[in-house]
Length: 346
Image (cartoon, rainbow, N blue to C red; front, side, top):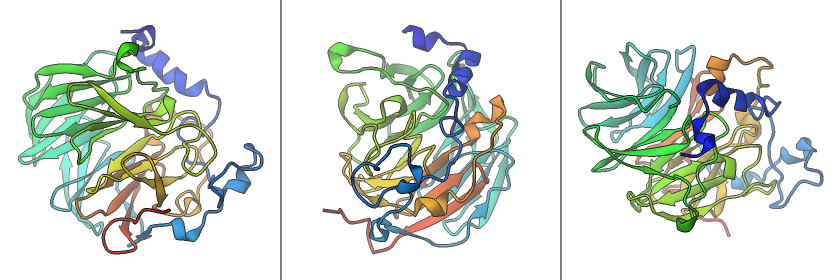
């Protein structure tokens, strides 16, 4: 483990504030995009980045934003039967695809993230996984990942459970019973693995339809693809002001896979929710950035609430997209404008 991964929790949180701006800390700032595929005339001129071609907006919002009912919303996930799960405070809310609350599952701990499975949930707390049934009763609690752990996302395949640990900048691979198999993403230049650069508590992952694990490397402004054995297959993305680029200090902060392999990404500092194909070709946007970010970010943030800010996103088997606005504690529901999934743009 390198020196970056040896930072204490306090040092980890301080890293977020050293950037010196609310945008870098995950505040949702009303910044949009140019209608051109190139850079703005002046990178400092954020006003020139607020307009996009309406034809690039590929989804419609299907109802009004729905309140989560939480003081602090953290994570959104989609289930196999069209249900939507939102974690926050010390509970999990279950909604249908229209935003109607179907259940509230109360917990004794704060859930940072979750992954539903047939009989229950894998729930990520700060440093460990807790397994519950569908009513929230604890079935098992796994060993701690360490005092510096900060679990931000969980993904499942048929045999493995993958954990994104922002605190230690690593992905953990377990079997479903809680036995550690390996770590993924440790720096190894001989294998073309540079290591994850995670300046703050934003670190996402997901299993793609091709069976590869996708992991956001926000400090490198990339999405990376790994085999379940930890071999890095490819990566795409980069920093810049073009439409297809990721901006700010560390993006994307979250992403979701669509059933056809397309990827929905969210950025902090700019309210962009974009659609890419499997290999990073930009297709369009879920919504107009100005519509998503019609708020200003808070000036003062409590250290313990840093994780709140920035969008999270999920998508279901029908291709619906759910955006969790952590600032306003609402979920927004979107559906593709045309039948099927968003078409590729030339």
